[in-house]
Image 1 (cartoon, rainbow over the protein chains, first blue to last red):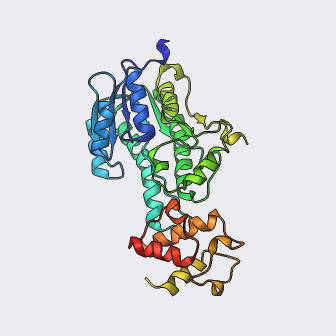
Image 2: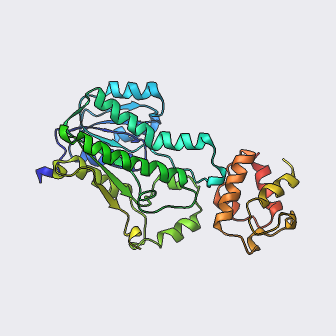
Image 3: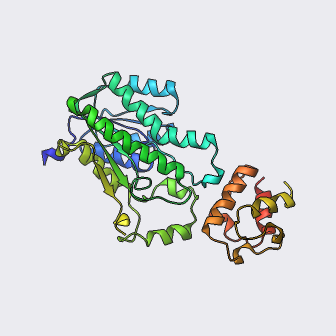
Length: 247
Length: 76
């Protein structure tokens, strides 16, 4: 099944120091891609690099909300066949407590930095003709919402709007832009304790498949979107939510 | 940090319970209005007003406002 292979493709994955981003890096390397991985935490990013199958992968530590570090990353990467943008934060905060800096932090990290990364790669001609761009979005803000997640939901909906318009605009270049909308995934983002274990256990029961997703179950969708198997697919979102939004 | 202030801030997270009914001994989980929504609001309030991050699992054993206040103090 050559169409599902990433052999010969050079791919940048951001947010690769943990969670879904790390799982995507591992899966893409297994599928044959040559990777550049990026993330904020040098130690954990190095761990991801060690886990990658094959030779020649590289890493670039960068906080994408920092203009200089973003520019350095764009400068560092070679011409790309694919980009997967994962960097994201979630911090449950009810609207009555939201301050300007909270809005800026969440929107900058989850959406605005993604927009800047994509435009800079395009402007610097780092995206090859027929490249595939993939954004990790969420069901939250696109198909449903959660209490305490106004900013997160807004950032993920912003990403979807950007995905659709850029898909249309970049189609003449053969560049495809798609996103993945996962439900709750077992990552450090959940384990940081902002939601109690009781509530997490109760929430899992709301999923028809009775569990949260695993990072690799989102990663396989990224491999699919980056591969030639989806060369006629653009402006789409792949829903991976264990059936959660059926109800 | 002062208890009266804490009670006032705590009480502001409720819409239907009169702020004047809250005392350090109030068992807040037994209030009719109490829900996971108030719990998140109280945690957000502690984070924003006192700069202290309390996790839901840490808050779970607390029953009275005094116990919650002591938990916040212990993290200061």
